[in-house]
Length: 244
Image 1 (cartoon, rainbow, N blue to C red):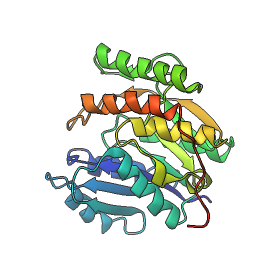
Image 2: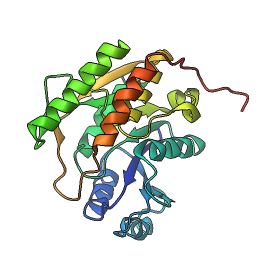
Image 3: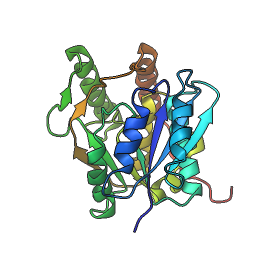
């Protein structure tokens, strides 16, 4: 039996956090959860702490002092999960835009089908997005077209944040050299994995925009991703040094 854990970064997710925790921990497949909360002033972390009494072995919490970026939250989580011996490590949003039922499909793509990274893809079978304004859909879709063109990788949803990684992939990557902090982080992780020779499989999903809480998207996030992709084209990707 594999050890599986879902990393969920949070900031002001009091409307969603208990529901997403109960849904993931109630799935047939055995998942644990690591919440990484960036100092939410709405009491998100307090809700998680209360639920830890109910799920002491499966629900974990890291509290950070403020908004330090999506990428740094996941990097913190990756290192924690590898140190604690999890085999399959997931990224997922707290707001139900990613369907928890699809976690099993991502796991199967890695555990049964042999992929090193499985991506919940909104665009590998056309466009599968619900309740987004058309402008945001087009921006997201053509961002992935831009990435495929500039970086020369066949990934249809390069900005997806619904992912399963094998532990071996994360142990091999030099996580301390990952530079992008926002949604560009998602692009950098996929590109680096492919450059290091790992296999990536896209699993079609339906993405539904959040019903509760507030989106954390901003123009600066897209700006970082644009310039970061151009810089990635010329960067040398190296595995982590085993002598550290």
